[in-house]
Image 1 (cartoon, rainbow over the protein chains, first blue to last red):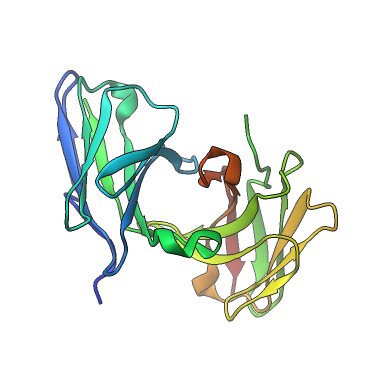
Image 2 (tube, helix red, strand yellow; image 1 turned 45 degrees about the horizontal axis):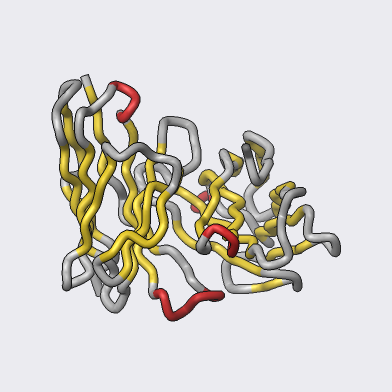
Length: 115
Length: 111
């Protein structure tokens, strides 16, 4: 049973460029959340997708957008990259029906460097 | 504003118990307390969670204060594989069940 997989593992971009990160959730999961983790910090919630719609959003600008596909996989898009966007981007999947017992399963992340 | 407060780092000797504290003074009645840990070059992994009562599982125990403003993660016998950053998290019902991570405690296990 494959866990959460993310691609690519590492990425280098320059300021102003656009980037797309991908995530496949754990088998049986229907909800995908994205987090940004700066060096030495805890993960910060970006947004959550369920039934192909953005359900919740953290304090991130509109440059951050996403998508969820019918097979529950998800993409995170960041436009007009800034140096401050350099971070580890984590995808987490969960099963919405678990509600009070919801647990997040994380991928190993995509390390994005903006030069 | 930080929703959880943890010490930056702690040390423990191998095979001894470890108590990792967390303060969450602004917790609401419906907020769940979660603990995750993150090993180097990996994403966080679930450890334990609870609402009001103490909880035990095969990995750890969670002790929740009566007023719920603090909690303690207990690793009964630390091993070298337990060296990680431990995050105390509030899952807040009033913001759509978002998970709010703190800055974590880096646990060093001394052989």
